[in-house]
Each structure stands twice: as structure tokens, then as C-alpha cells.
Length: 94
Image (tube, rainbow, N blue to C red; front, side, top):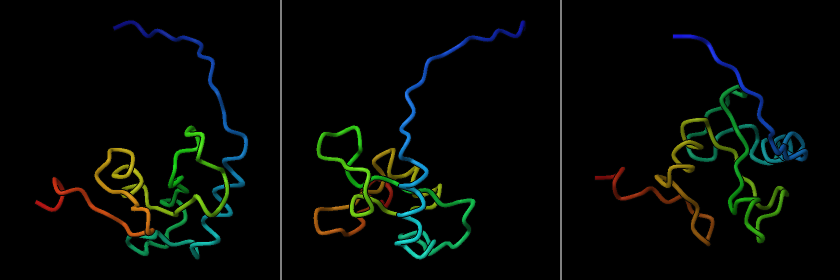
């Protein structure tokens, strides 16, 4: 197979690095689900997507998740309810 390259244009959210630092600091640099303290495996997730008009890039709209739990969140296998509780999808629990 011949190697092919292409150039893409990407939109970068410039606040992401600051948002990550604020959220990880607020959550004591631990995953809010598992307590995992390995910095390289932690990500700051928006509770309400910052693409949503209600989503803001501030610490009150953030949660520290391990890569595993962040992926579960992105795939709607895990979420945060309006009371701030972590909810796991029935398909995962069953």
C-alpha cells in the first residue's frame, strides 16, 4: 500500500491547557471515578460540552477522569447527572 498524506485544518480550543490544570488541581489530581493518581492518564472533561452554548470552560463545568472513564463518558457509557452523581449505563452494569 502506498503511503498518502494530506493536510487538514483544525480548530483548536486555546483554553484547554489552562482548563486541564484547573480541573486536575480542583480534583486533587485524581480521577473522580476511580481515584487513579497517575497524571499521564488523567484528562479534564467538560460536564456540559464546551461546544454546547451552556458549556463553559471553567472549573465548575469540569471533572477529572482517567482515560478509561473519559472514553466511557464520550461513548455515553458513563455520565454525570444534574446532582453531580456519576451514572453508569445499564448496558455496562448488565
